[in-house]
Image 1: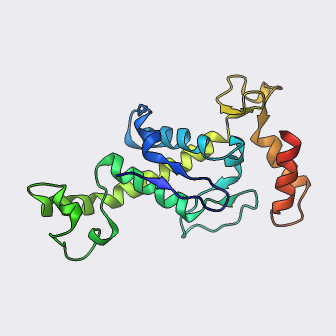
Image 2 (image 1 turned 180 degrees about the vertical axis):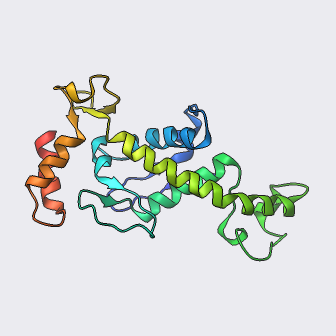
Length: 199
């Protein structure tokens, strides 16, 4: 499968499959591996890359109360979760993810013998994979907010000086700026001003 994010809500087109094929999965378990992959992908999506700091993903059951964050566009989160299904080997087209199994479906033909059992296996494992993907996405976004932005190189990276660093842009600085330039809800205008002042 080719998992591509279509241009949406300020996010450009991004081919997650290409990013996955160019990276080695690092980590001792599935959540860590997915989290590291998501970090690589999220760092490449926006320009400048530090803009990703202000986005978050919360499942619909979680209250949205933190005014520092914007929700990732649904198209982005859907593609990110779908690529996890494919990486782990439980991807299914929507029409095969529930109900009776259409044995004439084009995707069924790619599964070979035992296709019906394979579809059922994938259905059974998708809930666990979904939970792992959501956890990995949350970890990736939190970890990226500990990264620093090198203005000269235009890149996010893991600075070993951490809070002692005086040469790179940090999430804490952006967050403080946003607090000082907004009344109540986050405004698009104040964030745009922040972007210009730090470039």
